[in-house]
Image: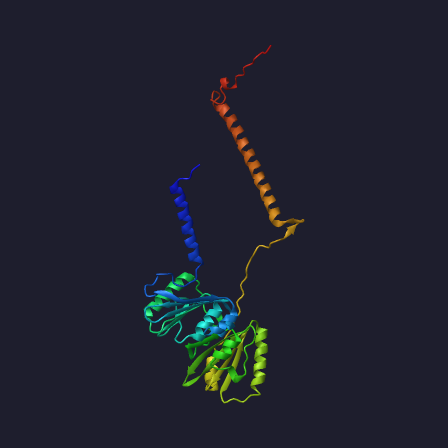
Length: 362
């Protein structure tokens, strides 16, 4: 049997289209070829998942500390200045948010592009889900950098994430959100924190820590707010903190407060009354949510409840069918009796319908 040429061409075309679609989906978040006329060609590109290779990348140690998974970079020729695009896949959205606050050079803004972004003269950074993107082009048009960022954000897809819950616990009195920095690793904290609270606080395992500048009544300082996995861990940390503080002398005034798993340390030139105003609003409350769920895996008389329920439902359905049959049969019999009494010559009871023909076979 010969296959028609047009059918063969159609099959090959569909296969080619499917292959093209698969390769597009499997590709990275970088702009497609010819998507932007300003990006003439790719000058350089690299991609790896080995953390050891981060040593040759700018801020590579920071990527490793917050939770690195994959690094990709492309450099495009744009007619004048080259444009570099870096895409870093991290362990979660908290890591991406941490990178954005630590490496930013301007205020955080709500996306798009991304969940949040920062944009200065020649660098645009944004975090979207667990992805952190940096687009650099010295002297490149700001509109081009923004269009590239929007394109990459659309390729990543909607992954709207709220900031880490720790950020919402910062006291609002005197708070400067433009100074916020959020840390999830000890190395990034040591390298990029504005101050180590009290000069002696270490980044404990499992904790999150954020810092922001406060200013009130011409008095300024830094508030370091940390959250621990449990209240008990926070209590132990806070007790150790108080014990060390009594043995140290410092020209900087230091105040601290604990609320549940939260520990706040305020340093600066604050008078006690002003510090109390700032720390007074630090609260933490627990919320209990009851979830009602049918128990799974139970047995009755050695029979799983799922199977037993199916059998019971089947028996009930059969009983209902029997009852319905009895009711319908009784109703039909009553109807025939009443009909025969009022209309003996009705079509259902005519003699010809009941006539029996006998055949004598010999």
